[in-house]
Image 1 (cartoon, rainbow, N blue to C red):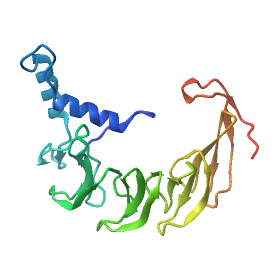
Image 2 (image 1 turned 135 degrees about the vertical axis):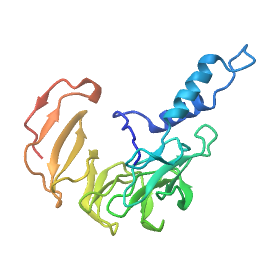
Image 3 (image 1 turned 90 degrees about the horizontal axis):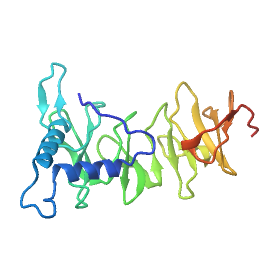
Length: 231
């Protein structure tokens, strides 16, 4: 079992990883000959909090050696190794004994969901199966986890749509953002003239239920809601 904390919306995962790297490998401050007591204490605090894999009894089964880790799914967890600052950071997948399932290759990735995991290489996303085989080409700007057989992905025009496990487009690329499907529906949004509009689509891409718009040019300053969005 691994305990992880989700980042707030808009928070840069890369920046968080960089800050962890700076704290756990501190540099001697200008005018000092050694690390300050504060730096040493902070380093130890963070190292003690880095992910440790434990079983249900609380017994440590994989010692803390990773900067980030996902929960185990189907016996597989994703972990981050290497240093962000030096450009050596890679994501890899391990089993419950801590052994690599396949080599650390990717710059980013997700945990496995419905037998597939989203992975990133050179700024593009695709999907691998549990053997590490690339089953959906690494070509998307963004790739999210599969849910109910579909995954939200973003094309090179920065439009979001949905694909199935064969990599076929099942919902056209026309949204600004979207969430995973749940109970047959997915929340999606578009931006028109600075107005963010939301609604729910079914698996055919058809809008269903209430739709609304947020009368604001920035999500940080949401000022009003109108339940009157025409397609």
